[in-house]
Length: 77
Image 1 (cartoon, one colour):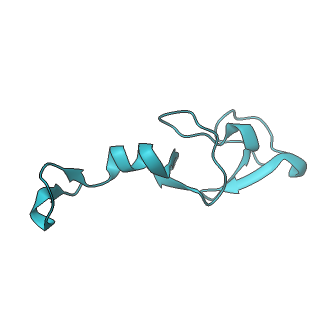
Image 2 (cartoon, rainbow, N blue to C red; image 1 turned 60 degrees about the vertical axis):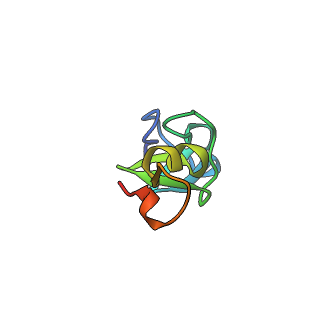
């Protein structure tokens, strides 16, 4: 029986949600930053942790803007 990476309890088939190559309980699949409940396929991953695509993943790991447009106004991390 697989264990949920969030709560480390067994995940039964009826309650299973698969994401990031792991099986989760539906309420345990949450954004690491804002704690919003996520749905499989509608979120991003960084260091094997789930994040909501916007705003958390974009704010933490997306391009950093410091100008008013143009390709030179962004830095990438």
